[in-house]
Image 1 (cartoon, rainbow, N blue to C red):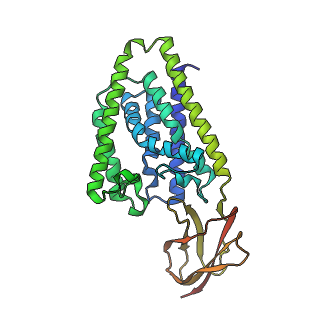
Image 2 (cartoon, rainbow, N blue to C red):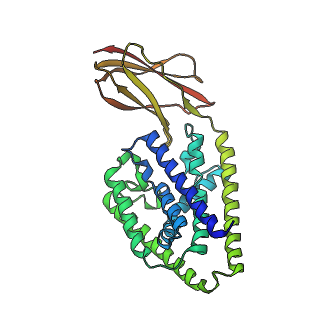
Image 3 (cartoon, rainbow, N blue to C red):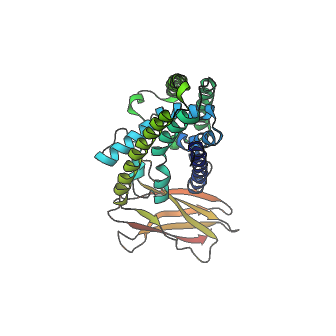
Length: 337
């Protein structure tokens, strides 16, 4: 396959992965949490469209920001995979019970986006000054939207509190301004370096030896990424898993109880579930939960919960760390209020 066609095909693959990631995150976490606005999710569209259109603004801007932002995740993921300890903890959620296989597979994109970005930039991109404007606007819009619209508990794009200890002394708006300024400033410096390299190699871009060198670097990075993901999967496969089974619903009440996901972003594992009253009556409910690895008995986790007609409620329940693969089952016991 011709090298430029290969880049376009891979661009469509990243675009499909971005759409799949968007759908899954909205289905799991809901729209209001805005979990799909993480940079690693949004940047798949920058990279995908940049590869398809061979657009230097999107490609150069993506690589400039990704080399800074994604590197912390990649280093932590790799270190945790091979040495069983974290560097900064930003990737540890991948290796906690309740993180699904599909989520694990989609998160492996972190390891591949930079290699494909480097390959695309140095094969089809060109020197451009537009990213000097695009990068600040993109970062300000992304971080500003995360801070204004996302719940504080999500710490979307690390806008509410630092994800890295080096910035832990800062908080609130001063932290946000400093954080945004650092990302913009360092990304612009990286973009300057990209422009210098593109200008330097402009005369040999069509030479076979240049393409072979870039391709060799790309394949080497792919090998490292794939090796890391394989070993990460071996580590992930040994972790006991939490899964939700269908709840035991009360037959005489018009309620829908649904396990949504296991929260793996914090040290305390928690089951996030919803209760929706789709009937015309109000109920008072006791909620019971059973974990099949700890016994066959249901244990009451909520007492006298008021569920209003036509309303939907979100709840969470802390879970013990499982020793083996464990199945969670919920059961409401309700009466008309």
